[in-house]
Image 1 (tube, rainbow, N blue to C red):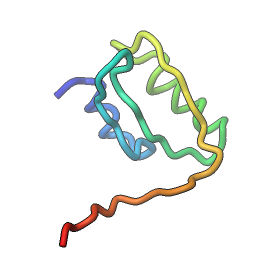
Image 2 (image 1 turned 60 degrees about the vertical axis):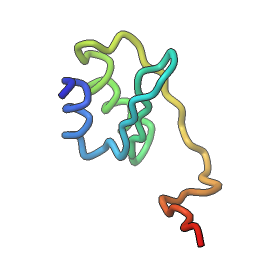
Image 3 (image 1 turned 120 degrees about the horizontal axis):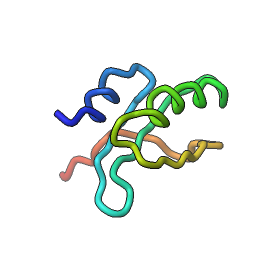
Image 4 (image 1 turned 90 degrees about the vertical axis):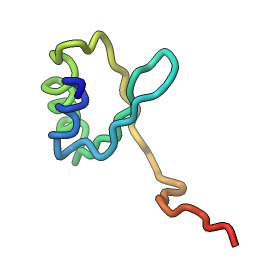
Length: 74
């Protein structure tokens, strides 16, 4: 397993780690109690991580819809 993926799987703050196509390699869904808590995570897990050249962060302001339910065809 890729070292980055193993580190993300081991972190209780990482809710989802998705390998994607395109210019970005991964999207992470990270739970933090506040911005300072996230900054500590980013500094420890991303900024100095081997193989991570750059990262960007987006903060969710509101969740309009969230589901993991898949529709069942009749």
